[in-house]
Image 1 (cartoon, rainbow, N blue to C red):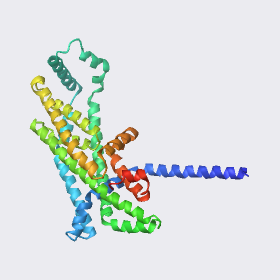
Image 2 (spheres, rainbow, N blue to C red):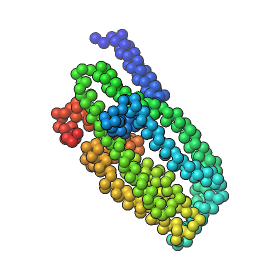
Image 3 (cartoon, helix red, strand yellow):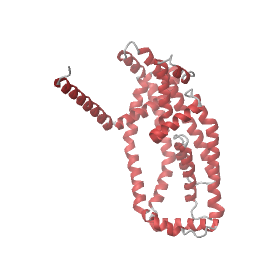
Image 4 (cartoon, rainbow, N blue to C red):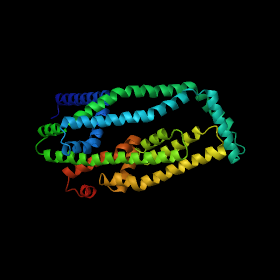
Length: 363
């Protein structure tokens, strides 16, 4: 028989559970920066795994020396990146900060007149349309200077982030065997082997995936850079790097990168003749980027996405598409790693399931 005491106890337990869950979620929200640091450190650890194994097995380095050497490699790569790209970024930032509304509007109007002249646009008053849309009034010096200042503040705050990430990564690399030994003591005996096997396989597959992704981005960056240098773009390094980074976003990223490259190329040529310089150069750059994407989509991506994680390209496409629809751009970025982890876990714990056996037959 259900009494009022039982009901009240049930309500109290439910409220206590809700409070505990809410407290945990709030705590996770408050430490979200630390969680991000941990995730980045884990990815760096996976990427560094082959180097660490080489240092330990071939050169007989101790765990501490191998971890220190690996972190130094990361730091040198970061410093090289800074010396390569930051001066160019600062140069463009200075150019933007010096822009005034009248000058910017004059440049837009000049480009507009060139387009009207070249394509013989009739009965379309773009000046009036722009004026009615109030776009030009929104473009002011404060917008650009505020934008640049926000970027500079972001870069300044990243200093602590880099220190934290490298510190965590060092201990992830140095003490990974100790972490595994500690996990064995904590894990339940019944599922210990399955969990440890899952961790080992996930580590192997994701290491291959992230290294492959890094190689893919490097190849795309070099090809983009060649295209931009061929057509004399003054900001080739920055544009190629930004567009290569956008390739991390499957399918949509390359499209955004191509549009960005076209816009930046056109802006960099403002003041030149539209018909003979701006339009042809922009078209050639876009065609070059499309060719690079064709190479990447037909050679690099199938090898990286399917071979590294042992999944069919159609399978990867559908998972990425579903994740993008459900969780947006972030979902598209993490789709392949998360799906790979789920497949490994399902194979270890449900190997006799027919659906699982079909999906995981190559793992």
